[in-house]
Image (cartoon, rainbow, N blue to C red; front, top):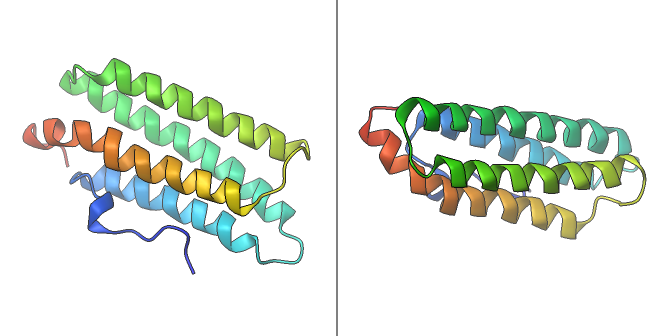
Length: 135
């Protein structure tokens, strides 16, 4: 069973960003599903690397839109992105150096991290960008 299921509550109304959010959900669900395997370490390592890289790519895309369309709260949103990347890199580093196992608590953190960011922070900019025709 997936840890996160896409729903209309997660949509920001911008197809390109919703598609990226769905990919982040897919990666997190892959991490979660791997917890049931006998030896999930390789899948965890690859999926965590994928999550880190894709999150950076996604955040860069959002920040490019902020700059292109003059979103005034873009600086604060980028600060939030930077904090989230630091948290994700710390988790990845701890996992890569065997200082942490993938646990239900880590998966819950990733779920909360993504869903809160989408439902709170991302929805704050979505109306602004939708009004300007961003799809």
